[in-house]
Length: 485
Image 1 (tube, rainbow, N blue to C red):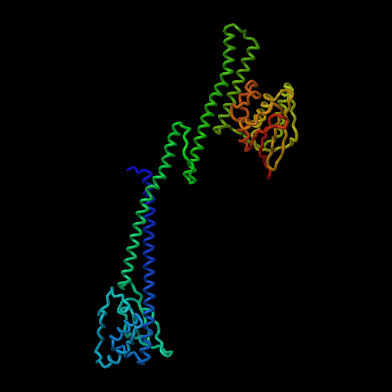
Image 2: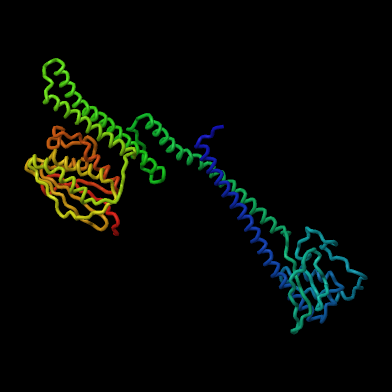
């Protein structure tokens, strides 16, 4: 049978409460019984002290235990008188009882005391024992069990006897029994009331918790069907509130990713259509005889094919990086050599566009653990970015700064500048700044995205800032190999 989460929570709350109530009931009952026995023992010890005082006074008056050995009724009066301070002494009966003939054999048990021991006979009278100075019983306890601890009876600094009391095993006193029963009854009622209240409170509590979980489950189902605009209430400050906040963040991320995916597909389609349209137009013009198959036409066709190849190559590289399949053959290399070689390879192109390129503070040895080819691709894309988007007559400055165990490479070019609102988007795929950095310069908006992936694959970071020269400042930080912080 399928049990809903609401009923599972309700049963869990009920079981936990029931366990607590039962445990508290048993612990309280055990503690009460121990306290009651402790109280009874204290009362009986006080009574034993009173009996001890009466016996010492009797012995002082008579000089021996003879007044008790043949007078069980007097022993009974001593026991009765020990309950409280009597208005008369039980010794007043001694003279009268002496005139009575002594019975032969063991004297009969006094009135009110049974003639044979029984497990139910746990009264004070049955458990007390009196011994003479030689520890011979005068009146021994009629309850079976181990011997009690005896207190000496001292008269004129001489031990004349011993008085002992076996501890009670059960409560016999009717008042104490009634009190114990009342307490047990009260604890039972309280436990049942607490259990009932817990059962009543657990139901709305489980409903409230399940309602929030049900809301999250329903929202998750809608999210799985593509409804990325769904949101849930996240005002609570508990774990469910945190879960709701994470759900809303996930929904927003999925919505952003969906919009990015759609823009990604649209941008790819547009980037592919442009060179394909040019190729188709040129080929159809040749086929229709409008244009002749000249070297210029072949150069145009070749240029568009190369543009397609670069675009497809960049897309392939990005897809490999996204799935973690881009291969890096990292070895110990000198980053200065890779950087300076890349710079020298582009000097002619910079000169053709009347751009100056300067390198400053580049150490001769920058040991890093990296892939030389991927780092060349990084520098190639950065230099091409300057070539495409920097105005003629401008400049590019490349500097290096060593900071503890890292090296920071700075690429700073001249105008045009990048608007502040576009700084954080330059590493997005297919993103271009309008007007100054547009498609007409030949870029597809993938170069900086590839740069970011390459830098991060080398455990580094890359960021953009406004350059002091009026253009773009790209700062790259890479860890140096073998350097201590």
